[in-house]
Image 1 (cartoon, one colour):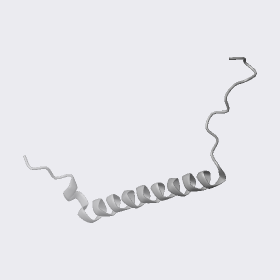
Image 2 (cartoon, rainbow, N blue to C red; image 1 turned 90 degrees about the horizontal axis):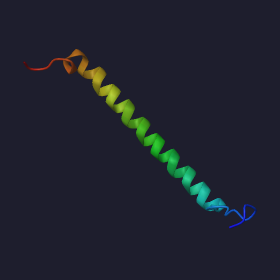
Image 3 (tube, rainbow, N blue to C red; image 1 turned 135 degrees about the vertical axis):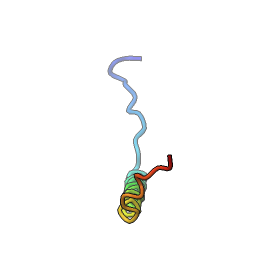
Image 4 (tube, rainbow, N blue to C red; image 1 turned 180 degrees about the horizontal axis):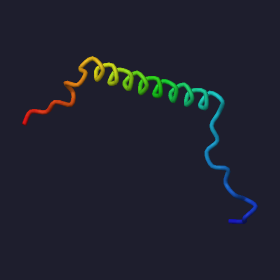
Length: 54
């Protein structure tokens, strides 16, 4: 293959790019909600989280 005829790779349409962006935002929001939930549970439990049975 010539150096001048390199394949462009996968080119997404506008609809595919929009769908990918929306999916990424949804995943980020879900992850953020989980982080906040875990933090809230940890704060509610307080120092009891650190107590381990011997």
